[in-house]
Length: 508
Image 1 (tube, rainbow, N blue to C red):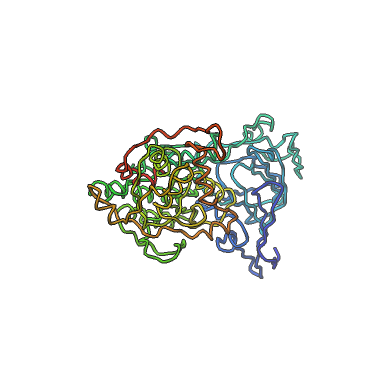
Image 2 (cartoon, rainbow, N blue to C red):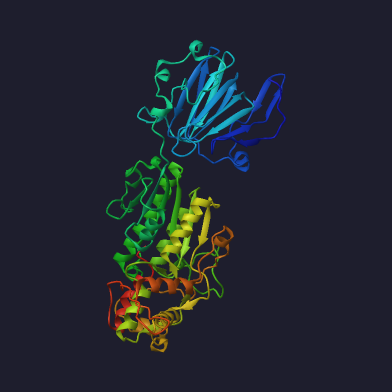
């Protein structure tokens, strides 16, 4: 063939994700040369980095050889090494595009990226045609996939050579018509830590459709050394790691430190290996505790970690493993508040019961409401934002824990002056047992997540709405009071704050 001097270009088609790629071909008297797959160049052209692991070649002697239509459970890049084919692709995935057809001729100067669930087929137009395809999973005789009769009248593929005179296998002739094809379901999303505050918020946000799978510690243990074999991971597209060891003070003990590292570091590392090996996107939730809190300004995503205690150290180690995964969103949050046991609900209970708590006043940060964190995670996935680390908290003026407690008292109709601010040193001195060092500054910079099009909700507004939904709020004018049920763990002494301050970091 003659040289093709055009640059590498991509053309989108009527089937979402199916992309035609024109390839530069360099020819001389000896023959020709092309780069059939060039990761850097093709990524720059907008093709997915689909991670091929197997290269196959189908050699076809006869003109009119017809193969397909097959929608195997993997992505593929198809091209021609010699000869020329008529290619036909049919969308067999669930959704409005089911049954949609795209056709094109392919010679050595053209390739087509075929996503999972799209039926692939071709018919040779020249003798001695070598058809090639790169795939991102190893072929297995046990693989199940959708298939379509190439003679289906509904799709009506305009084969250049009528199928009656084509060379086609008996098996391909017996595939079902389109009306009898079971659409290919999308890969699933697995949420770990489904019984925690964030896990429950993610379930509210994502719903219970079949493509979402929720797992608690009992159904999927991150400390299992055989985690890589615990699931058929190719059935998933995304893992959301909302699990974690969050007993900050216990992590200062020998047993607690070992438990924290087993889940937050080793477990996160195993998930990272699973994601990398199977081409999955890993969403991992981290914490402000990876910083020492000594910085005078909000922490950006690229700030170097400097954890003070065992919990923060285990999370920082897990972050490093996750960051090495090609497809990852490392979401860093602080002071998570959701349904169940949390600092805000406890302060509201103390206010109502007449207790006057002493609360730490020299640690400053922003609350992260679990529903907002879940919304940010959904936004990153749905918008296909660039992979990397993102800070996610609620927005607005940073406050100390004491400042937040006073705001809870005010919003619930109580005197905020009843909250007494104490220093971290005073608080720790009054507590029995090990006490973890905590960052004085937990404020995270939100510019990066905002630049993706997600606007974090104002923290004061979020606090008011949270309280209005869950606790007794006095009416703005005289009249009947408006009562909501308070979360069950109500306590009546200032000392009970000690236990709750541990919980304000999670139960993710």
